[in-house]
Each structure stands twice: as structure tokens, then as C-alpha cells.
Amino acid sequence: MSDMKFKKDATRIMKRYEGNPILHVDDFPGVGQIYNPSVVKYNGEFIMLVSVVDYAAEGGGTDVGQTRIARSKDGIHFELSDENFIKVPDREPFNLTKHFIDNRITKIDDTYYIVTPVMMKNDHLAPVGMLGKTNDFKSYEAISIITAPRNRGASLFPEKINGIYYKLDRPYDYPSASSGEIWISDSPDLVHWGNFRPVLHQGYKFWNTVKIGPTPPIKTEKGWLEIMHGCAATAGGTYYYVGAILLDMNEPWKIIGKTSSYLLMPEKEYELHGNSDNTVFPCCPLADYETDTLYLYYGAADRAIGLATGSISEIVEACIEEI
Image (cartoon, rainbow, N blue to C red; front, side, top):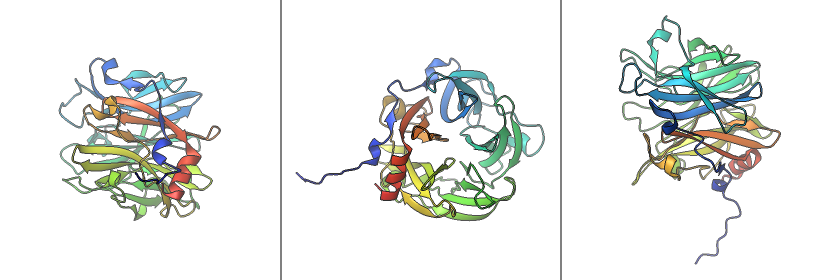
């Protein structure tokens, strides 16, 4: 037997909440799917934007997802609204959009900006990133389509860097969807974007051989912590994992560290079996700087939502040491 010993193991940083899942489709009659949340703190509450598909959704088939709000005082027990939160105006291009799921929320100053990867009606190329905003999580204002197709999962940085806004993009090929990278772009005003450039190609480790995708970056003393998903095709099927990279604070297109291992993989029954088997999927991690805690709310197999927590500083170190 080998006497090799590993002093550190990044797969042990995140700990699942023992009461998982915190939301499950079986608790909501008439709902066919519930998955891929984004969570922020607002006015002392945990606000979750939840991806939901009703059996009775207009249109049937695919691309009929909606976003609803769930609220919680403790971050564990959430009350899910019956109302759709993202409602777009009846004018182009917004009246051509559908399937409002997988939101990424970024607070910039006092405004919560939401990037939603939407599909398009009439077989137009998609998905594209739709930017909207809210100041109270009661009303939603659509702003613009801010990506070209096919781009899924665009995520804003929470502040300007050297006077410029940045976002991470996730372009991918079609129709096979056999690859997906992370790119970066910048903007003077959050609407007009350019200077697109690649950041990271999928396949640097076994758990992300097919595609990778971003979430809104988290500012730390050592750089921008980027929690991402990785997808791998295995003999047992497709698996979605969670990992992390660290980006330079002033030149965020430069990678200064990344986890070699995943942080989370599908292991529990509610993660392994559902409408999308073998899936743990993050959209918007929540950082508590006072307690050095990352709250990772994640979609599980498109039927449930789980919670895992871990040390922000340990994840950063795992990126730097590439463990």
C-alpha cells in the first residue's frame, strides 16, 4: 500500500447542510421541475430566485421555465411564491424571449442586476443573456440583451475595475453543445459590451472535460474568486460538478489559480436522480465575509435545491495551491 499522504483535499472544503434538500419539487403540487437558484441577502432576508417549470406552463414541451422568488429569514426555510417574478415588456426584443431560468444576480451599488440566459421564440438563435434589474425584489425592469448567441450564464463583476464594468461569458458550440468555455468582456455602461477574450477552456481536469460555466465573481484580498460548474461525460453518464478559479484583481482575464479537484460532485440521491441526473449546479454563491463563509445554494438534478457551506479563504488557498 502506498504511504503517500495528502495534507490537503479541496473536495472536503464544502459541507452539505444535513437537512438537504431545502426545497424539493415534491413539496409543490403542479410543479414539474425546480432547480438552479441564485441567492442574495436583502433587508435582513435571504432572497432566492428559483427556476421553476409548471406542468401547466403555456406552450408545453421545453423552454417554458419561469423565475419565482423564495424568501427566508434563516437561509434554510424558504417560502416560495406562486407568482412569476421576471415579466418582460411587450416590445422587441423582450417579447421574443422565453424560458427565464438560471439567473445570476450581482449587486452593484444599491441595485441588483440580474442576467438571465433566455431562449428565443420563432427559432431564433439562442440562448442570449438578458439584463434586468430590481431595487426591491418586488418589481423587475428589463434593460437589454447583452450577449450575442450562443452564450449561456453571463455573470457580472460586482464593481468597476479601473473604471470599467466586466462580465464573464459562456459561449458554446451548437447543436452538439459538446463544449463551453469561459470568456470575458467589458463595458462602459453595462449595455454595450466589447473586448471579448477567452479566459479558460474546458478540459483542464477530468471533471470539466465537456464544458465549464461561470457565476458572479466574489471579491477577496487575493483576487476574484470565481465559482464555476464543470461538466464531464463518463461511462456512467454526464456529471455536473462545482469547482473554482481565481482571477487577478486588476486584470481579471488572467487566471492566478484554480482548483485541480472539484469542490462538490453529485453524490446524494436527490443529486443523482431527477429530471437531469448527476447534477449539482451553482448560479450565484453568497459570501459572508464576517464569518469567512461561502453559502453555495445549488440546483440538484432539476428537482431539488441543496445548500453547502465552506470557508472562502480555504477555497482561495485551494485555487492558489491548485489542490
